[in-house]
Length: 260
Image 1 (cartoon, one colour):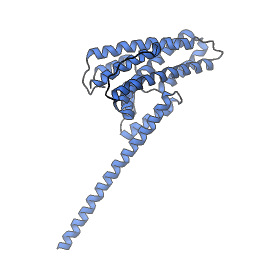
Image 2 (cartoon, one colour; image 1 turned 120 degrees about the vertical axis):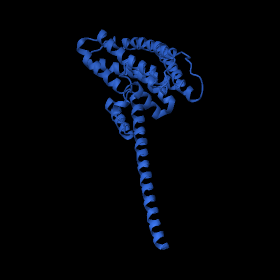
Image 3 (cartoon, rainbow, N blue to C red; image 1 turned 120 degrees about the horizontal axis):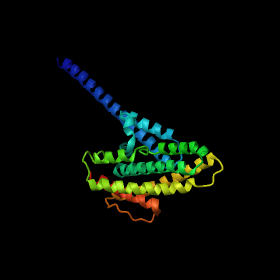
Image 4 (tube, helix red, strand yellow; image 1 turned 90 degrees about the horizontal axis):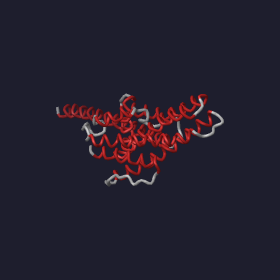
């Protein structure tokens, strides 16, 4: 009897152990898939911020992350998606950077479209606008309208569902307006060049947009770094009109996140 009981008990234990091992293996596989997707996404974002890749690379990385997480890729679009992507690759400071880069990238793209319409000959505009679309496609959140972004902030999408103080939203709105104005000044100068061909104009515009976003990313990284070290974010200035506007935006976004 004892042998029979032991046999049954042994079989039961083996079965339970096998099930647990299978569950553990499945969890490890999912975790590995998410880690790999985040790594790929981080690489794509780094390249994108350096204006060294096309929209397809970043889109593919976003799709890979969404698949690994088991969610719809559309959920990673917009300014909230930019914050999610940033948080996955850099925690709370990364989320701040994601939001600032998205808002800045969108401001640069909108300013560039207006400048192209005002300053470039009609024959050069289609290729220049294509360059702008590709630039915006490389930056998570850049396609979000200002209204949608502010609505997301006000609804508490980035503050754990808690509606932030209206003063915080107002500060971001004001600093974002300054970023938009400064962005227009930056790209206006680029599009007033003497271009021989549409390709030259598009290439100059792409370089100008990449330079502007690169400066903004560095400033946002510095401001977010203060948050990571437990310090207080503040705008020190000294970055020029565009950089100073971005720095103030980064400070205001950081203060919003700090109120979570």
